[in-house]
Image 1: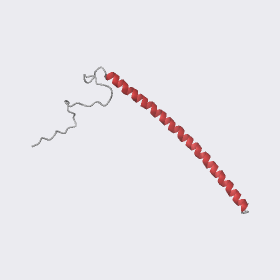
Image 2: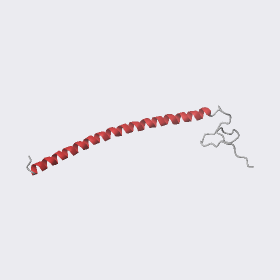
Image 3: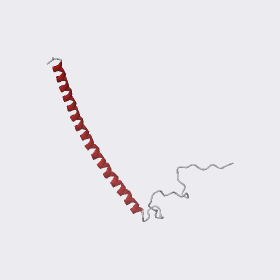
Image 4: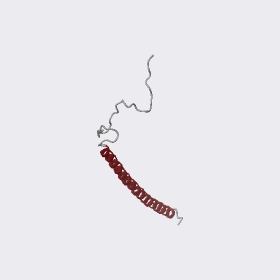
Length: 96
């Protein structure tokens, strides 16, 4: 009989975990000498993302304000144009 591989959510401690980042491990788990540097990099990334999100939020709010202003201007021009056209037609048909 073939033995089935054991399925578990707990990682096997003997298995080698592939590294996906450019920061090498220190070799002494879990608090090696490079841990502070790696945490500092993560903190900087989080700070940069927070600043970027704040800038995006401000940009979206400015764009919404501008769109609202443009809409009101367009609505005024359309209503004025329709009123002028209606007045011109009313004069042509001798309603006024």
